Length: 418
Image (cartoon, rainbow, N blue to C red; front, side, top):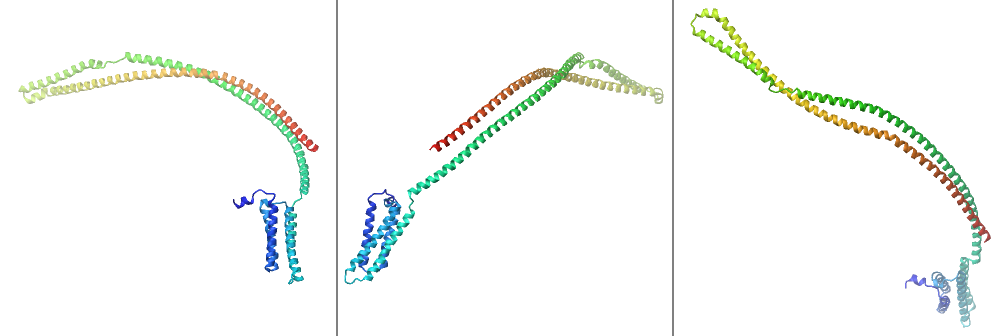
């Protein structure tokens, strides 16, 4: 068992008297032993005082010995008084012997009375620490009455404050709800007006745009139809005016060949004529004088015919190249016409989609009007709900105020009756 558990054991009714008489017997034996052995009076007085102080500490610290403060003071006082009586009894006992004198008895009595003084001081100390139950009850009654009066004043103040607070809350709630209702009504009216004006303006602008867009769409359809017809006619004409690649060559080639043959024949004739002339042994001067100019003219004519034949061939080649270019241009034009036809078809699809969008835009003002009517209905429902909320808040505030005031005054009346 630990020291703390030993010190905290529950109290036994018999352990207090046993410890008291045990300490008394121990102190009496110590006093007699010290006097027999001739110890000084200071030691004889100090030892009982130490025993008394130890007993007081033991009563305070050891739970089984813990008594009321008045009982503890009485035990200390009576223990010191008993030690004083033991010392005086031993002094009177030694007075009957031959070696005793009156001065020693008086000295022993003076020193022995110190334990009584210490015991009386301990009794006064414990008595000062003790609180009277009657005084405690009276003080508690006084403090309780003061607390009750203070509580009643505070409750009265709280009731008044709660009443004023309830009225102010009710008033503020009513005013706030009225202001909120007015603000909501104003906002809804302004919003509906703005929404109606915006919807009307939007519908007007949509109708205007729809009419202009319809006219533009019709004009675009007409222009597209005209363009398609024009391109179709152009394609047909280009197809009908197809040029044969060998047409010019077949028409011009015989003439070019005839010119070339004539030039060759003329050249051969000139050459043969010159040969024949060379064979004839005419005088050189005569030949040069009579036929020189003629031969020169024939040679010049032959050269001119060759040049004409060459230029005709080049012209025929250029005409052939132009014919090829014209054929390629015709093919490219046909391809362009087909692409343009595709674009026209896509444009027709776009026009149909645009007409569907116009129909949806024309139906949009009707949906806006339906939304405006729904908003008016919701505004009316909100106003009704706001009025019901204001009424419910007023009823709740009045009920809370009445019930709280009744409870407070019923409690005050019950306390006054008690």
